[in-house]
Length: 107
Image (cartoon, rainbow, N blue to C red; front, side, top):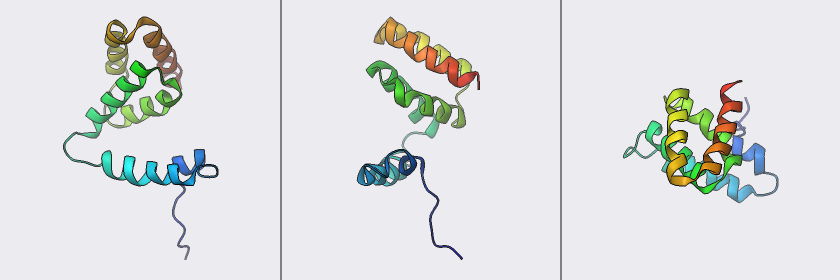
C-alpha cells in the first residue's frame, strides 16, 4: 500500500520550481481560505473571477472559470458578470476575459 498523496494542480504547475508556493496554495489558499464557511464556494468563485478580470490576470482566469462552473455558476451567469464588469473594470479587460470564457465554454 502506497503512502503517497495525490499530486495537486499547484504541485504539478510550480512544485518543481517553487515548492513552498505550491504548499501555501494547497494548504492555506485552498485548504483554509476557500474552506471557510462564511462564504459559499459559489460566492468565492464569483468574487475570484471578478478580481482576476478587474486586475487583468487572464492566465489564472481559465482554471477559475472552470472552478466556478463546478461551484454552481452557470456559463450564462459568468458571461453576464463579465459583461457587467466591462463598465467598472474596463472594456479591454472584459473583452480579454470574454475571450478566455469563450475558449473555456467551447470545450
